[in-house]
Length: 418
Image (cartoon, rainbow, N blue to C red; front, side):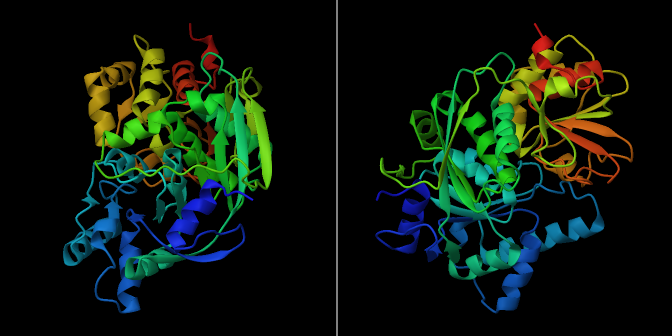
């Protein structure tokens, strides 16, 4: 029997010829990522009693969750991280303003097909868009990785997702992955690797594939992998001179389940409160009053996302009662959006631009919701209290749906834009 991509990557990382789903492996990690929670990881690392990290060149730390520091506690945590970075000689450190970790790592050329990447953030699955087995782990596990370079893992079963069809007007990758999550459920892929195939995925840009791999975590995915192609290799080779070793599944690979989706007639999708799998076509919630619209995040804060929204907002004004917040995913994205004129469009429309970071998405700062308020957002979670008050409501949607809703002051169908 052949092997899946996950099985091949984990076999290589474990130094074995072959592994099977359900096997326990002691895998060598290629890259370890942490963000603001590196403060906790470093604290646990020191308690282990190891004096030096296993390989400072394989650790990347990006400050992105509470940036600039929103409390004294956050400022002290950032200070402790900077001190640890200096002590350990960790050269791949990105301080306030560089961007969100899941955008920064691909941009800076850290992720390449075939790698095993772990991060202390659940949406580390994003790098699967590059043919990577990437997954989120806890701070204690990461302290062990920093100390040894190894991680105990159970080889997951793999789901094969085949997505076909040309997307209709104003329907995007976010709508596709929300539809999939709505169909299989928030626990539908618990501790499973997902491999994405089909003409729709082939047609997606690298940015759109990142959206799918990122959001797949909300179905419980351990990893969410898009097999690498020319788009992948082109993106990676623009950013690193290191060797690229793509990994593909065998034709006779064994999958636990195969799902097939035809998105030719897919409508714009909305994940309604308070779970990501509470997904409905936009028409079923159209007309609901909104107080806030958030465009950005590690899911949908890339240049193509800002471009779609700017095209909708150009020459128009956000509804008076709506606070529209735009969060570029990185400094690179921000600068590109400035050059292309998107930022000026947002400002003239009445939106507020905040620095690259995670603030509004996790409800830390830069857009916390009050009780009774409703937000539509291109972020990845809508749990009760996620973006502020437990009495607020969060609706997840594509950048196009967020933009047109901001204009109308209520949840709206982006297909109305001509």
